[in-house]
Image 1: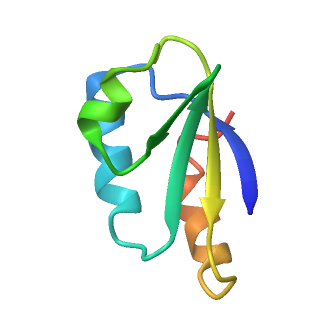
Image 2 (image 1 turned 120 degrees about the vertical axis):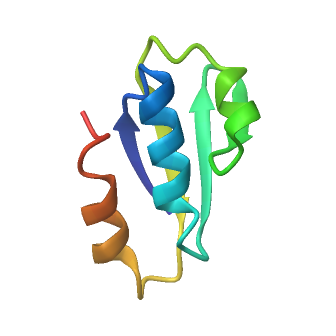
Image 3 (image 1 turned 90 degrees about the vertical axis):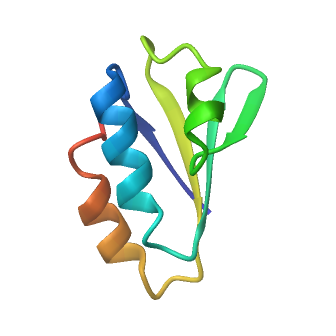
Length: 77
């Protein structure tokens, strides 16, 4: 598992983020305080406080790691 801090501080950023990660078979979890939600769920993301940075946990098998990190570059802080 790999963890990165991301910022999803606008509705457009949330939409593009979900579209970007939906291409991958890996599991993505967003962690904000005690809440853990599926990062591929737009409704779940909007239940979090998106004005603050959020931890993203990536559960991948390793083959797509480089491509996933490249895709996430615009969101990582």
